[in-house]
Image 1 (tube, rainbow, N blue to C red):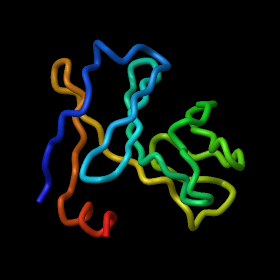
Image 2: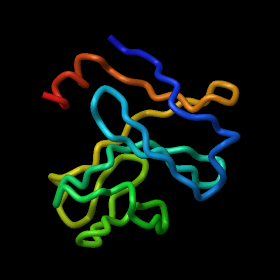
Image 3: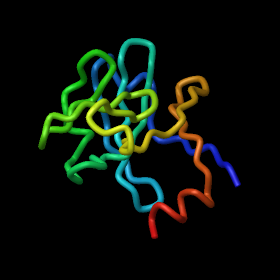
Image 4: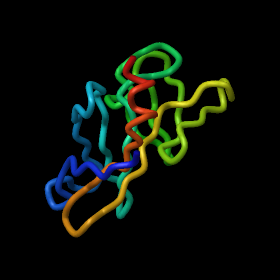
Length: 111
C-alpha cells in the first residue's frame, strides 16, 4: 500500500539546504536544489557512509567517504551500474514536502 508522508516544510528548507529525518526506522535526507526537492536514504550503497552529508555537485551527491557520486534523481552512479543510492519520490502539497512510500517495499528494506 502506498502512503503520503509529510516530512518537512518547503518554506523552512532554503535553496541548497538539507534536513535529515527518520521515517519507518530509516534515516533519510531531504535536499532542496533550486525549485527541486529530493529525498534519499542517508546511506551510501557502496561504503555505508552518511551519503546525506556529502556535497551536491551537478545534480549528484558525493559520498564523503569515497567520493562516489550518485544521481539525486535516480540514485545511479557511473562507478558501478549495479549499485544505486535509494531515492524516494517527493511531492509538494502546498508548503508540505511529502514522501511517497510503499509500505510493503519499506518493510523489506528495514528487515
